[in-house]
Length: 409
Image (cartoon, rainbow, N blue to C red; front, side):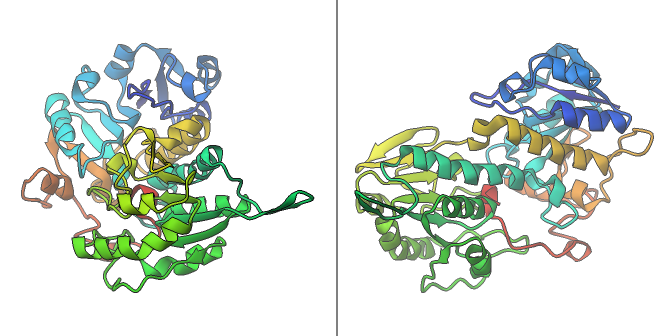
């Protein structure tokens, strides 16, 4: 089995799918590893480090032509994969339930390759080590707090000095998935007074366990969480009530970090323009949901803007700003995934009877096979040959833990 790794083509994408250390693990699993020259440089991994671990460096065309498994951070468009084997398995992020559904279909039809989406790794105990959404969200939550500290005219901790006492900054985190909990913990370590809100009341204890006050709003939250632990999309009326009730907390906060997302849907608008206008001048909002439209009405994806004297950060790829560790964690997710697909002789099998594979396999044999992706494409889901999935075989899975909200796992 030849595992190939390409240099990422996306603008601002500095991560690499496989680190030298992770490559060495795959080689021990009897795989050959080919990496496009320069693929890891932006993340801090030079070509020589790969060669020292037994990796073969090649140009892009050679990697595409030789790879049985192609590892990516973000799956490129079909045209950028020209020359890939029809029997190859492409693994990476491809947003298959939303904007990437059509691109996934084109990739399957044009290349014939199989496609496995890291966003669809089931939320089960067995799959935790492969959960790339969680590993990257963890880093995003940390970096959001650091970024806000850099932009805020205030410091986080309370200081008592001869010149007077400085009050601790107030940080409000919306969404208590992995990113939100990491943001809470990081802000707390830096000395802030932290509060948090999540539509799922089940996460209250988790919020309190990392040092924040859980903001309770008088809302009907019955059914706010699905079987996978994600927040369900709320009605327009429910979102309006959330906006109104959270407005006071937002106005009193120095820093607001938003992480609320619903898989396959635009991010819910939880902070209207009026709430931003009511904030103190110099306040900061870091919107971790910017890639799917943002939780703040005034967020501009990919930009940092100042509105009503409030700085609003719409960065769409914070993990890339800490590419060394983001790549290391993501590469470990991929190695754990391949470990359940490769036998002792290094032979890869796409076993659709495995719940993890069935839950994340988007395309196979030139066809879209995942029922939810078919639905996203407007086709009638046909699960006859897709093996068990979260939707149709939940009884065979380990009970999921109620943690993540979309990218904010």
